[in-house]
Image (cartoon, rainbow, N blue to C red):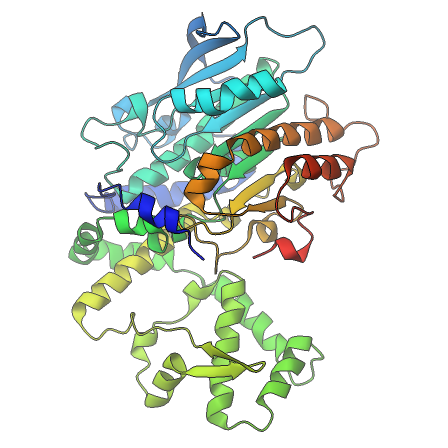
Length: 506
């Protein structure tokens, strides 16, 4: 159930995202092509000089005297590869390093957490006070707080607060943070920091995930309140109500390039659809002993052809939903036979329970306005999946160093029907908190910090600071280990178990 708090909280925000539309079609095409380069770890790492220049601007003690604040900046590598896409004010990346005031003892490692910003998190003060300072005081872990493009000092003057003007801006932000994350991690290694953790909350969690999976060495990752793709956030979650759909619809239909060129790129799912179809058909081969096939046969035995078709349609949509592939369904508005209409709108009985067949009534093009809205939403879902779905990027070097924290009733980040992270990254750890997005953020900051500390402990169990395996360690570890059992008991997660436990999956 979607959190009521999330829905009410969202109603307080009246600004609209993407008021200028999708962005330049030519820029989107450049971004599509560039996405292929950063999706592959080997090619992505080559886009950033291992000795990318980092400039320290200021060093000072914070007001408590307990930690040292080091401000710095560097040119975003993204500007070198796609010049003109970042606003001039965002071409330099700014960060603040929070480290112990008296330094480190000789021979002591220097764990560090790289913090990416969530939606609306401008400048450094919020992450410094909520995460960095207590993380250093309680766990001895330093922080590097990175300013997102389009936020804080990197925000274009014409942009109102956090409301990005173009859809393409969020892809520019993501591409920039991937390369900036690599530059930061390389610099941290040169400066002797480690183990290193990539962390963020909400949008920051997704950006941290993108940066972590493209790095070529083991790195800890703790994404909180994010999931496998951002497409649901902007098309189903409560954030979808903050989007200027009218501007998007107008631009989509006024410029043929969107439908004639970009739409084809977005929906080029032939391989994905073929593999899904092959798997589905194999499950219902008459010669198969598959349990799903046997269950379906027993359900449909003695039914009319009409009822069998309805049951099969339900089974097929359920199959696609479990794999995050509902998007490959055809445009059902073109299927106008009365029999198909009945299949789409009636209920069917499976395992003695009534199920409402997926209701496409809101998609049926009874008028041109509905068609416009539907195609704009489909295109949004497609471009968001293209640029943000983690299955489109390299697998992490060591998934066992990843601990995902999600909220069960998150109304901002829908999970139902989207591919679970432990399916994309087998071996990672997925845990759930009761409540919604806002309540998890407000009530569980301490838990987020403890989980960051846990990820550092996992790293220390397996790796030396330079990323080489310790003697006797193996790349894949079957958890729960002793560390697992202790931290789960201490942190008090609801039903927290190894990710291999099916009860943890959506």
